[in-house]
Length: 134
Image (cartoon, rainbow, N blue to C red):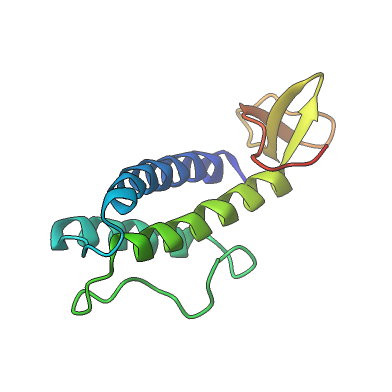
């Protein structure tokens, strides 16, 4: 991974979490209501971006590309799928971060403009991965 990968990770995971939280609220009240087409297009766009970003190792569901816009999913279906993507993003984070002196960092390849450590890596501060057992 490099700094651009971390930036893309933070963007996509933040968007996933935001949409997940919004749809979760809808799902708690009306789990069997259909998602509207506007939201579905945005969700599918985000899922497609996530699919491009995640390698096969981290893709949550083999064969799932996006929701069928002709067969509108329920709120609860969307929550289920987004939660799978969030878990895979956290797995990717936990595989690529380290803890140093009590602080969590991405440790990624540096470039010529970066102050790198002895391994040629740059540390970028992040949060502790969720569900990581220490």
